[in-house]
Image (tube, rainbow, N blue to C red; front, side, top):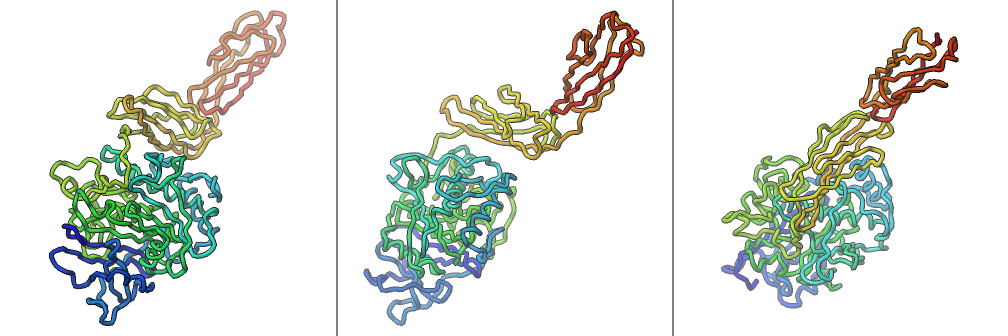
Length: 554
């Protein structure tokens, strides 16, 4: 390999029969028995093969990466030896057998979006369609992508839509753009857990949106041989060392697959621009609610290293919940040390492969930490925000108090997902009251702006509303009111306070007509007449009750 590190390359894939992992140890001190260097030019004559059948891996002399070849017959030493292979279940909500027609893909994305928003809006096609709803439940909208540099300078992640027939990109671009945005969400929220801010350095356009490149490959390149995919891409020029190619493949041979060099060096790490890296997510694993793309990209960035404190033997970790942790059949028992919400984020306790603030002397201070990857942008830290509510369920008209806090010096802005609700704001507090016309989930968002860096962070909390009963009202009036003399009337409501009052008495004067108690004075000329005294009571959610009494004036 020409470098001082002991390295290995893991190829992790979820195929129709499960998860495959090929591991090859490369050591400068001795020539490995199962991997041999191929002569320059020899790989040009190697065709594609079934990755699940016996074969060898050889070192590509151009990139130092591995290429699969069929069992050699005396041509290459070490022929016929397999790397370790294991089966692993598909992620929840996914299956290789999922239909991948355009309608099926859009419907699956729509169901996922409806489950997150309860909006039931269709997931529209076309380039102008919205990004969709984040897969991470704590986000109401995707994080803003980085806009550093020219969009093509330096080390960057290039998103590819690869297919072997007519392109469907215009129809499925909303799905793919949402998947790409979900990847940024994973890195942003994971970084914030340790006080940092990270974004993927995408190949982007002038508007700062990640570019999705449409690439046509031969059908033989999109089967179960991942290296056939890589070879086909290289022939088209997608082989730059300063690129990680994140493919969304219009195929269903895998769920996700990617490569990672086992290189612990803090500087000059092979995963940090040593050669082109490749990851692939097939159509059956789009819109699963679990970012397979973020998982595979994390592999290409260098996670999880073999000597990490909680590493499995096949490039993952065993301390759940964690985006990179699961039972990969390497014989290591899983243990649960973090809440289920961490399943969508990186590095359960930020001690194996990702932290923006490694402790002095810790493993990630001494070894490769993907938070330091040059394929990620370091943004100014945003303020931390903690948001609490007085309840997660309420009736219309009930005041629900939201309290926000931050360890930074910040200013606060508040908003509610329903503009029909009132939101009374006082710095770090807001009180929500919704009318009877608003039921279901209402989200309140607190946005903190750091007074120094002007960076912002928003957190949301949701309350579920049910409609309250309309008010009931008891009215007290005198039995024998006199014309020309003031008499008192009083309303006593039951329902959602505070209440509003409107008193009426035709041809009579009403004192304090908007209070619970009022006075009425009718002209002396009305003696012997009947007068209708009425009150309209409005409760906090806007529902009203009208009560009228007919009085004979003495």
